Every structure is written in C-alpha cells, then in structure tokens.
Amino acid sequence: MTILGILKIFILFGILVYLIFAVVVVKQVKIMNATLKTPLEFPVQVSSFIPLAFAVAVFLFALLAL
Amino acid sequence: MAEIFSASPKMLDEQTHPEMAGFRTKNPLTSFAYEPENIHFLDQDAEEKVVLFLRWHPITNLGWILLSFAFLIAPVIFAYFPVLSSLPLGFRLTISLLWYLIAVTYVYEKFLHWFFSGFLITNKRVIDIDFENLIYRQVSFATLDKIEDVTIKAGGGGMTLFNYGDVFIQTAAEIENIEFERIPKPDKVAHILKGLILKKGQLKEKPQ
Image (cartoon, rainbow over all chains, first blue to last red):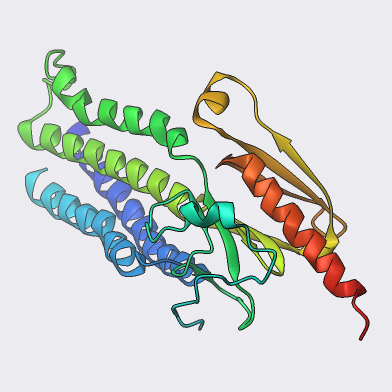
C-alpha cells in the first residue's frame, strides 16, 4: 500500500467520524430547541443539517477524487 | 409541550417596571428582552411568565467572528505557499474542502453556543441554560425565594464601553451559585431581580 493510499484511508475514516458527530449535532439541536423555544426553532433545526450535508458531500467527493 | 401564546402587555401586576417598556422586543437574536412573548422553555409552568430573557452581549462574539474570517481566507493565503504541492490535485481539493468543513463547524458551534446559552428570569425562578459545546448542555435553576444575594461585576474597558457584565446570584438551593455572565445592562437585571424577590417575599407574608 502506498503512502497516498494510507492517507486516503485516514481522510475517509476522519470524515466518517465527523459524519457521526454531525448526526449527534442534529439530535442535540433538536433537544436544545425543545429546551429553549424561540421563533427561530425551525430555521435552526434545518440549519443543523448543513454540516451533515456538507460532510456527506465531502465524503462522496473524497471517495471519487482520491 | 408549552404552547406559544400572545400575552397581555403587562404580565406582572403593580411591580412591573414601566421604564423597561422600551426593552420589549420580538427580535429572536436579541440579548436583552423584557417580558418576551415568544420565548418559552421546557418545564415552564402554565402560570409562569418570562420576565427577562438574556444572552451574552453580542460584542462577545467578535473574537470568533474575526477568527472565522481568518479561517475562510486562509486557503487563499496558503495558495501562495504551496505546502501541499507535492500531493495530487484530488488530495489538495479534498483537504481544502475538509478545511472549510471544519471552519463551518466552528462557526456553527460558536453561533449555537451563543444562541442557546441563555438566562431567564421568570416570576418564579432564575434559570441558567448553558450549551457548553455541541454535545453537552447544562440547565440550572433556583426559585426566587431561595435567592440570598445578588452581586454585579462589571469592569474593564470593553464591559464599561458596551455596558455588559456579570450578575452572580447566591442561593440557598442545591446549586449555590447561578452566574449570569457577560449579559447586557447588569444593573437593570439586578434591579428587576430585586423587585421580583421583594414581591415574592411580600406575597409570602400576606395572611391566608
């Protein structure tokens, strides 16, 4: 296995870990919206999916480009 | 689940502070809201009304906002120092995307930290909601009749210029101290709190 191959595995693994973290963030934002109710409840909940979507996009890009 | 409702302009009786009328706002990003109609919290009783809703003063966000701009322009600067030039294009692009992913996460985490970390004073208790990071939160509260001492701390150029500071609330409850940190107008907050505590004491003394 080449150094680039090892680097690819590390990068993909790192993004996978981040994906799990991003799912936890979505759940946590839902809990916080339930704890403190504000008029921005829906926009904030939707925004919690942005890091998750970004991470999925980066993971797919890394799978194809690396 | 508490329903969002339209409350009458004065939630309190004769202890309402008329000088605070100008601080009623519907701005969801406010750091200081007197008797907000659109702020509620979990475990709020039916007869419990939010008197004051506070967040950290907006100026406290300046540090991470500036750092975020630095994160965003860093790849442009690094382009002049080709550190990763030995790597294939795919790797360089992926690493750049990872950098922005981390930057977005940093900005989002800081915003959520400010947005959800709030302090509430109701007609029954004081509540400290602390959203320490994206995966840890702490909610503390103490009833008004357990409050023993209120201390204001505000010092330094920034706090004086932008009129923000800390209000420390000492209680006889299990949680001995509740700290309202970096809030706007700490003097007004302490004044309102004192009024509510005094009113609570008067209600207790009334004959049955």
